[in-house]
Amino acid sequence: MSRNLDEIDLKILAEIQADGRITNVELAKRVGISPPPCLRRVRALEEEGYIHGYRGLLDARKLGFDVTVFASVHLSSQAEADLRAFEEFVRAEPLVRECWMLSGEVDFILKCVAPDMATFQDFVTHLTAAPHVRNVRTSLVLHNSKYEAAVPLDVKGRR
Image 1 (cartoon, rainbow, N blue to C red):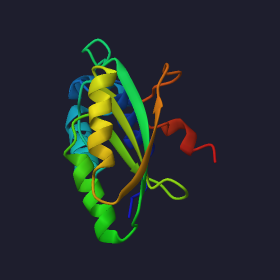
Image 2: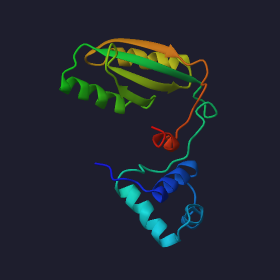
Image 3: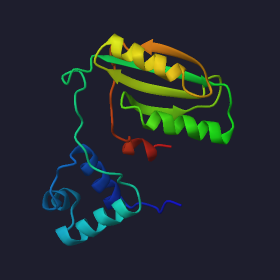
């Protein structure tokens, strides 16, 4: 169960989300409290799972991953053990950057990156041979119209 976050907690989350490298002193100044209670609040937000971690966002294309593809995967069985086995399979695949279980026609959607189409095609061959995979449909990304890694904290209060 999530606790109610106060205005300062929300400000802290917004600042950290905008700049994960912000110092505690600067963060405290921006949210209007002194550094010691600011650090306590950040640690509490981390321990409670509001903050999952800190990382740099890398440009996949600049690093040679020119191909981005979404793969829709339909399994032949939706038994709990088979779903978990597929998730375990996917976690071991470095080209799969995200995996979402869905309701409806498709069981999973995967976001994949690859340096080239040949590498991705090899992965699709491997994926379609995985246990309980009935079929795989892929959609090649032409370009990304929006990428926002942040949670829209300002939207929550509007509803």
